[in-house]
Image 1 (tube, rainbow, N blue to C red):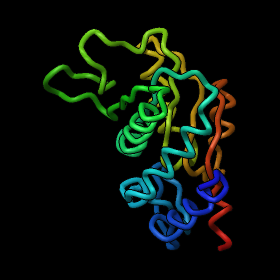
Image 2: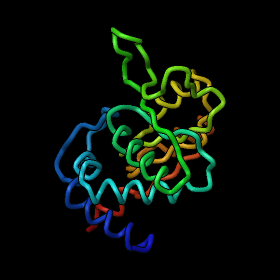
Image 3: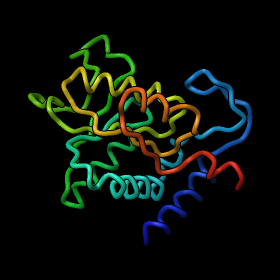
Amino acid sequence: MSNSASRARLADIIFARSFGRGEITLASGRKSDFYFNLKPTMLDPEGAALLAELTFDALRDEKLDYVGGLEMGAVPLAGAIAQLSWQKKAPIAAFFVRKKPKEHGARLAVEGLAKGESLRGKRVVIVEDVTTTGGSAIKAVDAVRDAGGEVALVFTMVDRDEGAAATFAEAKLAFRSLFKASEFLNR
């Protein structure tokens, strides 16, 4: 399937499985009359494959070492991208950032790294399912930077166009998305 055909098919899946209308409170605390819950798309076999394929293609030239982001939205994305990157012979390892470190065990904020492995000096992309203001991604950025990693960019599946670009510009972070919310609002 061509990139444009894959993108069109993924938009159909997101619209059918993950887009809705009705008043909702977003993670940012804002109210909205539409929402995206990308989990049904990320956990659908075809949806997961297309998200991974299109994201991998979009990030192909970034020379990345790791892909990850804040739990829960980044976990299925990072895993699918890591698996596809291995199949494409251009491996990008995955990790995720806990919203709050566990109070037992190793008490890690960054999970998924093997013993002796570190983000120090590594190029990282922060992925997100849906981005509104960028606050959730900034938490992941901070954790990666605290671990010594270099955040190359933030990449989201759907940008709601509600302030994230300004947040990331202020933080001097590159920001890109697969889709804009406006692509689903008038369907």
